[in-house]
Amino acid sequence: MPPETDNLKLEELFQDDQKDRERVYETSDDVAKLHERDASRRKRVLVMLELGEVATKNDLYHAAVIFQHGNKPVDFLNAHRLATLAAILGHRTARWLLAASLDRWLMSIDRGQVYGTQFEYNAVDRQYQMKLPVEETVFVSFEKEMLGIPSVNERLTQLNAQIRK
Picture 1: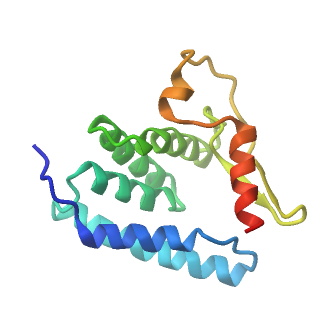
Picture 2 (picture 1 turned 120 degrees about the vertical axis):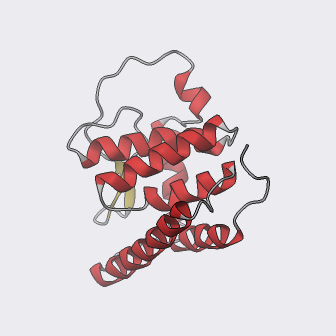
Picture 3 (picture 1 turned 45 degrees about the vertical axis):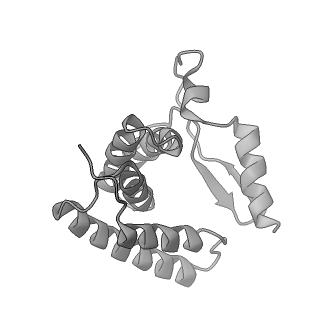
């Protein structure tokens, strides 16, 4: 059985990761610095995984989010695996992340996303847009609702509202 105590160092890395996502990075220098911070966090999480320090559903979710902000297919696959485990253990938000990490992994290997969870910032229009392509996929009728995936219009509204804050 997994332990009941969350890894506080991992929680801090997760909070730092989320703080880094509170703004839009428009210069290549700012984006490069963000990628450096993301890589540093992933390295620290890998060590925690190797030491068996990622064990609760919250730990698994926090680690998954950090890998989701990677830049290689293996990062997104790790995010997917960790999010799936967190969801199995009952972490509700991890359900969305398991879909988003699958979409991101598929796109990283030049395939279309299936859940429509990936968006990109259009600097010219100063707004987010759907990242294409999206594969035609047959879903179980309640699949997106069960995973907590909002409609494309709902998500675009959420993302673009963050820009205007």
